[in-house]
Length: 101
Image 1 (spheres, helix red, strand yellow):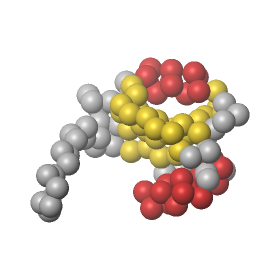
Image 2 (tube, helix red, strand yellow; image 1 turned 135 degrees about the vertical axis):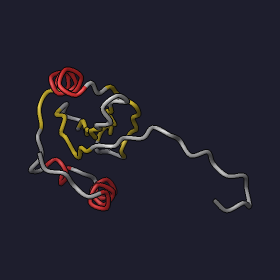
Image 3 (cartoon, one colour; image 1 turned 90 degrees about the vertical axis):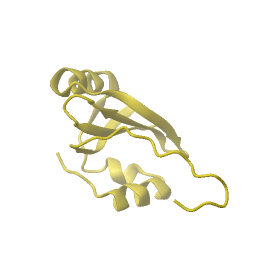
């Protein structure tokens, strides 16, 4: 599987995205999600809408630390955008107004 650097993911998201789907592993969402669960123990941790391009989801395993970013296009096709290890689900709280982090 090809892993894209974060900068390319952001650029592709801003550009409207089918570019990130090109050359990626794509298929039916149900099958990909089932495989992530069975092979890696990954479950959905977060999701968001990406302009006109579809739904971005982050799957991760809190046990193994593996993670995967999926993009589901409006036509229903789901593509793996990136994957990796050492997932950390710690959220950084927003600092009070006027305070730097």
